[in-house]
Image (cartoon, rainbow, N blue to C red; front, side):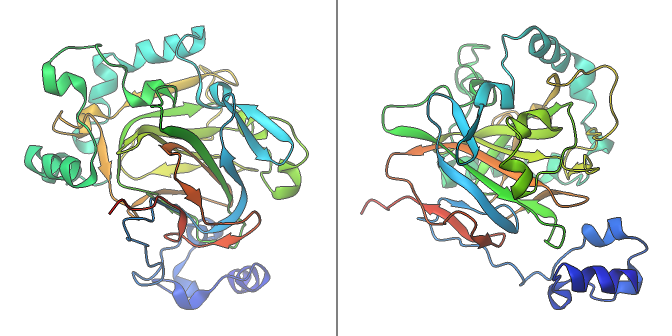
Length: 333
C-alpha cells in the first residue's frame, strides 16, 4: 500500500516499469532504483543529436561556461574548479598521488567490476573500432609511448579548448517520482572518477535558487573523460539523505559514508585505465548506455566542450526523458 501511495503521489508511471508488480519491491529504496522496459526510453541516435539527456528530470539550467563559472540557476554561479577540484590544490594533490598507487589500480580490477565483461569483451580490437567510429583520439601515451607528454582530458577539466570550441553545461534535476538511473549522454571514454565529500542538502529547484554554491557544497561523484570534441564530464550530485550514488563499473565507490579521511571539498580519485586494453585508457560508453543511478531524487550536471555551432534544443524548466536530445551540432555535408 505504501508504494502505491508513493507512486500515486509523485506520478510514477507503473506501466513503463520492467517489473510493474509493486509487491516485488521489498522497500522504497529498491523502488527508487527500479528498471524500465527496454523500449520505454528510446535514445536519439541521430548523428546531429550530439548530447542526450542522461536521465529523466527537469532542466534546471544550461548554457555556456563563462570565465570558468557555472550557473546552478539564473543569477547564482559556482566555480568550475571548485566543482571539479584543482590538481594543484594540496588536497587534490594528495588524492591524485593516492590514485597512482598500485593498490588503487588493483582495487578496480577483476572481481570489483559490476560487469566482468568490461575487462574481456572490450579488448584492443573492440576499442580500436570504438575510437575510430566515434572519432575519439587515443591517449598520447598509447600512440608514442611518452608518459606525461599530454595532460589527460580527465585532468584538463575543460581547460584545453581549441579555437572553435566552447565549454557548455546542463543541470538536470531528478524529482522523487522520476526514474533514478542515469545513462551515458554521448559516445565517450571515462578516464577517472572523483568522489567529493560534502553535505547532503536538498537540490530541489527552490533550494538551488536559494543556496550559493549548492552543488559545490554537496557530496558528488564526477566522471571525467573525453569525447570526439574534447572534454566530457557527468557529475552525480547527492541530495537530502541521498549520498548513495551507484556507478555500475566501479564497485570501489562508497558514498554517504561520512569518510573521516576526507574533509568537505576534498576528493578521492580513481583512474579507470585498468578497465581498458590500455589504448583508450578508460571505460568506453555508448550514448544511452546505463552508467549508474541514485537511491532517491537528485541532480546530474553535464560539463563538456563542443564546437561553437553546438545549440541546445531544450528550455529552462522543461521536463526531459533519458535519451532525448539536449542539443545538436549541425552536420557538415
